[in-house]
Amino acid sequence: MDIFLETDRLVLRAFTDADADVDHLLALDSDPDVMRFINGGRPTSREAIRARTLPRLLHDHPCFGTRGYWAAQEKDTGAFLGWFEFRPLDEHSPAVVELGYRLNKAAWGRGYATEGSRALIHKGFTDLGVERVTANTMTVNAGSRRVMAKAGLSFLRTFTGDWPEAIEGSEHGEVEYELTRTEWERRS
Image (tube, rainbow, N blue to C red; front, side):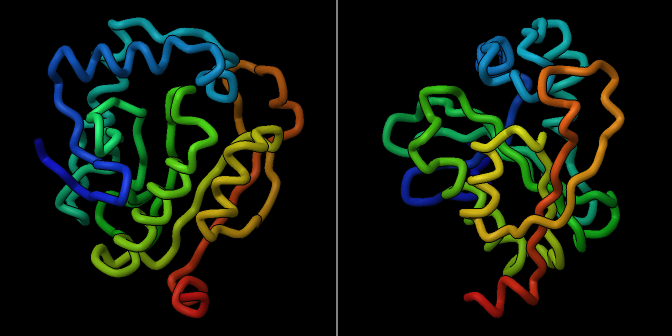
């Protein structure tokens, strides 16, 4: 197992193209509650997981020399919880990264998203040369916004994204949060 990061309760590891990871992603992306703020709750097909999702999750970023997405497992049980994103917006520069997470419902409300986000932010600012962390979600996604704030990011702006298909709540736009290295160091 290619472990990227460990916390008290989590192991973040590289995804593989093995059937087990495909099955985990299929279950995650087939839950209407998990996908509510992504695509309105529609399930993702196994074919789409293999053709679109997995290649994105397996991509190595030259500026990091590693991936931008990691499978999240519970440290004690090995249970798949979902994934975290910490990916550079420019393939060749680690300066600005996007933070994201998608966890199954069993993991919600247990602090995993905040714990994993804080650990990735710390690693980014101390080991990876990151200068700014950004994160986006729908304005109405209160749970994700709470995680962003608990992880140390501050509200930056509300904006209207280019939604290919409107979903419930998209009429309120999206929000962007950020944390700079300078601000992180000041708080630490």
